[in-house]
Length: 269
Ligand SMILES: O=C(O)CCC(=O)C(=O)O
Image 1: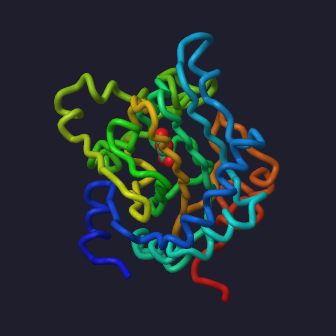
Image 2: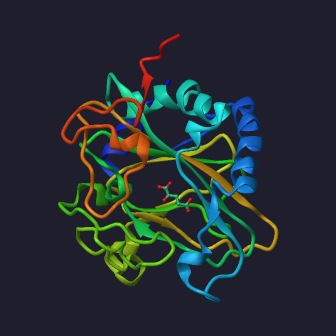
Image 3: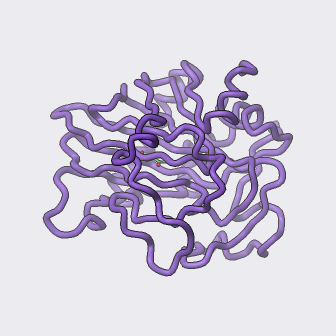
């Protein structure tokens, strides 16, 4: 199902690109629920975080759509992704941590600032990774992700920022994310992938990553991120970050499980 070299690349580089792994029928099933998250406001414009008059265009994002959409829950739990996650995370058991709709519309000036997903997770452990699943062809012009290779191995716990600004989230802890593109050594370690629908990138939760603005006039950048945890990950509420109701039920230091995290591997049917 997945080549050993891909698993090795994920652990070595902190990111791997898998080509043509999401069947067209699954991609088609994502379209309507993704638009529904935009229409309902579940995925909301992040422009407000940039400050009045700072941003042009829309970049809408939301989380935990699997809790309300049968199609998005099915995608996260029954598509090829859980099996791929088990292989990449070298785990016998995999839990869905969260999913996230991320739509950068044409002309959106908002960059996704460099961050690690681990900084936002109420979970700790090595086996954590994010699948980024584009529904449109993506490249640097419309905001494909970019990654600092090897950064998942740095002995640093980064502070979460406001995603479209470098301002840290008040009350949180950790190292300040460096200005990646201004540092020639870090900039040289940045990679990105031109993707077509069906391709995904998978990055480790500790890998620094971000995305440029969508500078195109007419190419949407619709994507769904699906974030998984594997063996050895435990629940660890993070200071300064909100806990939603379904997350508050899990005790600190304990194993992952419902209602916060959905078990998705091994498959139950
Ligand atoms: O889609 C984006 O611009 C950012 C996505 C991201 O950072 C993630 O899913 O981890």
